[in-house]
Length: 628
Image 1 (cartoon, rainbow, N blue to C red):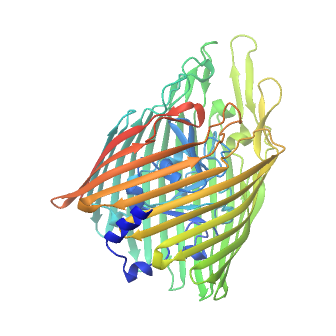
Image 2 (image 1 turned 135 degrees about the vertical axis):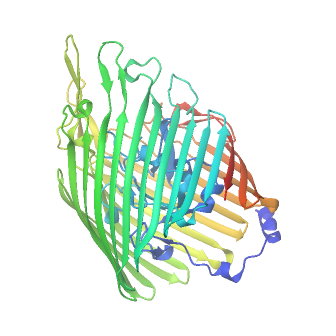
Image 3 (image 1 turned 90 degrees about the vertical axis):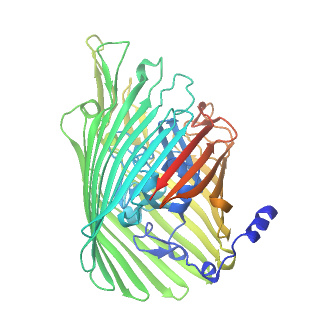
């Protein structure tokens, strides 16, 4: 620390503008733009500069910077992230938004794991992560964490850009992008390919990953005070799954294709009123099948098609200097077609109508009340409502206490509600049913009480965010045997999790940035059969340093105690730490900027990931960027 301080003193001093720079404003928590000290929750903001300078290749790796987030995957091609509790392998209990569009899949398995792979780091402006629950603003599935990815406005992107990454373990990444203006409309086009060989190939694991993407965005104005934005894209994922020598899960390549379109228009009605419309459409095509070798010609198939369309209208108003509201109405339709999964050629679907609103009321100069409510009617489950009440009290200038309660739910997926998986044979037993849903499973319910503190010391460029929470999950969804190989989905039990976490950020100079976060958890399962365990202790830290002559260095250290993504015991991961480093140099090539970066992930060598036998080797790669 003494060496770091001495280096800081030798660098450019902070100015008065640096001292009094405001805290960042976030939109994720209430749908209102709020400074961090007014937000009803704990938020981590990762900006574009930090994303570029961090030793990562995708969004999931970037979440290691966020206190409370665990990253793992049942194989190296299918990696997910979970906040506080490793309850599933598919990201079913966190909500991920891309410019406000949900990438949550409600079909087979559900979740956000593969949706996170459809986002290119180079297109991201910033990421806002609410460390907590937020059904009061976004409805079901915003259970453990909300990740809001804000992409770059087309007017803010370099005209031409290219990046190439080469490394061990088959790492081959290429990004190319163009930006242009046409008749007052700004356009951004990005093509991206990414690939690697996954975990160490032990135990017959098959987990190569190849991703190809094409994304377009256009931004413009249709008149005074009327802004619009259109986005469209296609992502094709070729993901290795299965194991050599396992006839029930044979090695194969799963194909996942996501095609999407999303339009947003915002009208400033007055200095105090605005109206926003949004329309989003997604299609997911999945091909995942293999021949069951012991009994031919039986084919095991998990493929299908999912479609979602969502409409929303949102109104925001500033009623006075002390009173603001945002509210809206929305409708969505989710449907899936898959004979192998539902034993019908007809679509299985759910529709949701929703009303939502948040009020921000300054009760006094140092007291702020945030109240929110989200009400939804689900065509299969009925009507539910999820409230939030949070009080922020500024005990002194730049020092705020938070106290509040909230309720959230996660809806069962279409597969949970309608599964009907049957395998038919030419010889006895002729038919075997594996998953047959009774359709009686209900939502999971989460009640949260939390106390928080946000302290900001402008003269030291230091911010401290602390969260103390009690999270009580009820009606946990799990499968039970109904005789033979048949299983059904039911609600049973849950857990109580108590957590204390903090996030510290310090900028001792313009050239230096330091992050430090820790988490302590205590978990008690109640009448449940699937006792996954989070780490009792977690550490995340980062150091970013700008050096003379265009050099830049960064180090990210993460550590956690013993944990389990699956049933504890032989599946438990020992306590472990990981260090990632990056060294880069930037220089000018005429009117273009060039950068060469050398990155090492897991500097200390190979380590277990997800399960003890799943090993992630040290990764070394070189990235060259050119932008103009």
